[in-house]
Amino acid sequence: MVNISDVRVRHIKSDNNKLLAVASLIIDDCFAVHDIKILSGDNGPFIAMPSRKTPDGEFKDIVHPINAETREFLSNKILEAFANTPKED
Picture 1 (cartoon, helix red, strand yellow):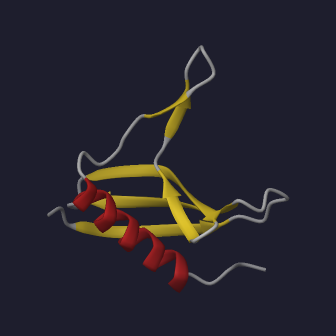
Picture 2 (cartoon, helix red, strand yellow; picture 1 turned 90 degrees about the vertical axis):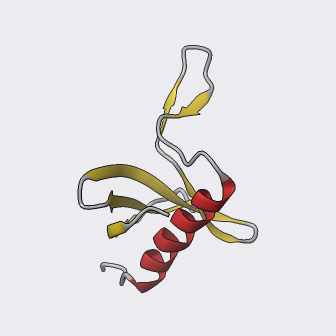
């Protein structure tokens, strides 16, 4: 499994109630992933990996885990940091 060196979360004040925060993570002190969205869902918060809009209007992830185990690991780390990062006033 990868080593997550750091996770930083920035809570978002927005009229869009779905977007709760944006996270960045550092993997093995040498690789950064920015703009991971933390969104509100029916079953609680979840993450959306960084994506871009294609010419046909679809959104495609530009970085993402290859398997479910890694996705769950990253999601747990990011959501744990989200829960432990105080909201700014």
